[in-house]
Length: 129
Image 1: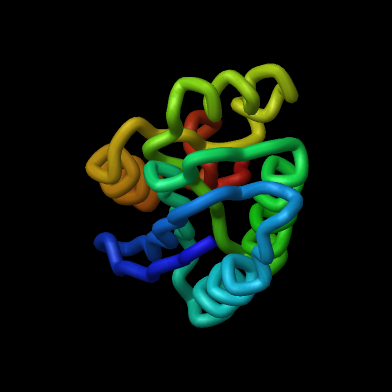
Image 2 (image 1 turned 120 degrees about the horizontal axis):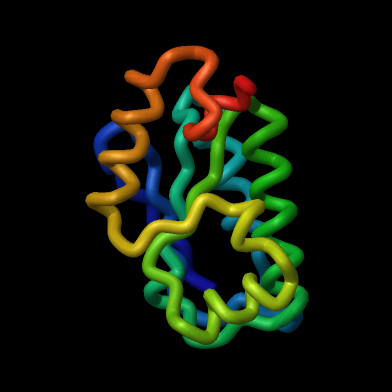
């Protein structure tokens, strides 16, 4: 799997290319997500548009990256999911766990809106109730 890093407004985008399966080494993905979160880039976005195949192990890797980013105070969003990827997340009940966006523009708009939301906003990902 190939991973490229881009800056998108306040977020860091990790463009994934290839397969997210049990046979693939995801060490670089984890390393880049952790280092981005540690450096203060709170919003990490995984662009799955270039992911040709994903299996249960790949879903587990997404959960692991999410947990690592959250441990550093960041948030993880997914963008450009293929229909089959979205369906797999739905079957596992994970669409409610991940923030999922159709486009990068939606990610930026949501990040700006979340920062402008009041601290007690129940609709954003700020964690306040």
